[in-house]
Image (cartoon, rainbow, N blue to C red; front, side):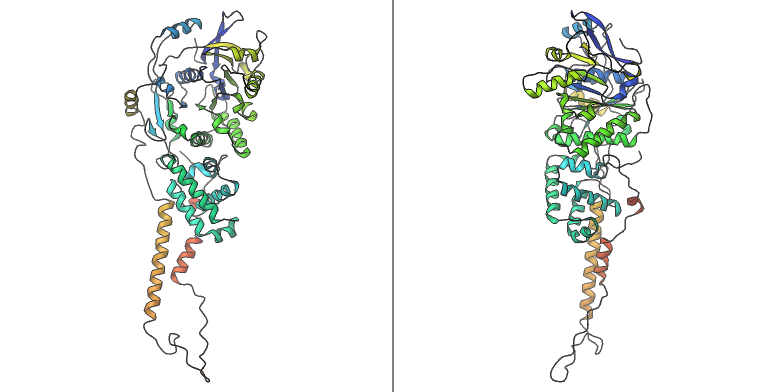
Length: 515
């Protein structure tokens, strides 16, 4: 039903519910982003599945999150079931072939897929502050921490690196406050307590090395299909802020790493952001503005971003305006907010004189949606009431045994299993502290040795009594630093290495680095 320039989505219906025509998503506009919305149980996951299948068959790698485990079935061949065969007949999908797809499973916790990690330095202060829900003052200290790490060449790889740096900042609060502004120990302590909570919630699994290589989620198989990277997110959703921040980091990494390609004949990668409301919920305006900027600019990198959520109101208008391909499943309209959502969704479509869009949204059945994609010259098509095609892969989750077999046979098997803990800020700061302590001890021993012997006239003997019983004034203290003082000040005032000075951060504060 689809040629090599488009993806078959389903078939639109006439007012009498008879077949009208096939509905496609043109690959040349696949990087113009998209939106899949609808209430729970209306078929969003299946729509995501058939879009991922279509992009994969077109040679486009896909990254998506599996919130409930249902999407994992895309790795296995589908089987004929009555309701699937019936839907294939309704949309005139002939032949209805079953297929398995090349899937790489990932998991931040390393349980249901390959471990996926990023370093603290790569995450950057803006996203880390968002993850930790810091106040404005605390976010300022986090920015100082990253600035200090950049200047002094301190690698921030994992959470213990950041904890060590924060402890160092608390000790140097007065000195740093004169350089960067007010740094209070209570604020640093609050950040450290938040880090502890974050660590208990599992974030320690995410921060570290080896960090994810973008090339590993952009693989093409030998038969020309795009690999589908599936992130196991059922456990991750217990910390929704970590989930949203991770996906936002990944999106910003794609933006920073990939070269400009303009408008290719098909995307270089398609990125599905499920439960998109978590990204924008309680997000500060500066973050939303930067997300909007990334979404607008990442198109020229050949990346299509598709937001999947229950309510179109979950996505800010500035971002919504960038989404050209839309699939709207049924919405309920019982509350004022739901009624507003229906109205908003209806107004974003190019009207169809055959039906009232707002009414249709509340009457759609499961697996049915209003569809509008970009046509020739990038113009939105007239909205059509569409039956979504059935998937070629398995509908539903795979078994744990099937998952483990696929993980073992994965092209990245063994590459991310072992944590690498190289010398970084934690070790460097500990080493400097040890050197300062050793220098202090040596200075004390030297002073103690000198005090054992006194030579008259060389300042170690007691001042001679003066006439009248008075003693001569004690000699003025020397301005010369002890060895320990010199070592400590050297640590405090250390100038960053050339690596530290060369660090550049992107739009969302993530580290710009070569791959």
